[in-house]
Length: 261
Image 1 (cartoon, helix red, strand yellow):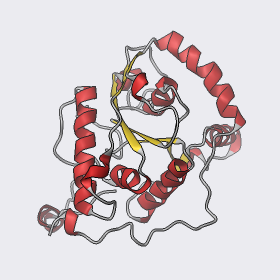
Image 2 (cartoon, helix red, strand yellow; image 1 turned 135 degrees about the horizontal axis):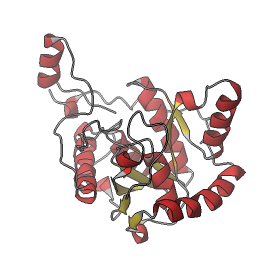
Image 3 (tube, helix red, strand yellow; image 1 turned 90 degrees about the vertical axis):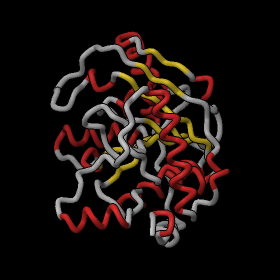
């Protein structure tokens, strides 16, 4: 049995009819109009491929993930507004700093996501689906979390499920150098050369329906190959996660690989 043969984890995850997609508030336009030109002037990033980005309709930006700055670099470089996932603690802080964080991320339409798998991952995907079905752009990182060694890890299939479910085109994004601006543990960003490369949009529908695990896996692999070409990273043939410590669990994962969302 392979992940392609597994029971589809999405079949019973229909969102409530009353659920609505998170939207970008009026503050987003102010932030974008001020922060975008200021950032472009200060960091002078190299941005290529913006002509590939569809300016209307649902589109998924799927990027490699090197730094916290990535979630700023993509919206700044993108020629159209884009919403993205954000850790839940950005919305739950207390005091003045908590209010500022919550106000900022809510105003830009960020999607709160709990760390974890299964129900937590599916909840984030359902939010992304609602954004796409509203005709907007949504960004996410198929690797799931930041690369710890600069390599590009195996993509999780949630991005393919979103594309195959909504019919949205997927624009691969290759980020280069963002890990040098604010390395893990650094308190302040540094000015370093950064590149943001937008690839040609991919229509993944030829792989099959979203209900097929094999289709999701093959679509994700095609996307990750496009990201690798844009970012120039070495490819790691495994997921970006800590391997199971239990020998039995490791053996089971090799023999019966489960699908990561």
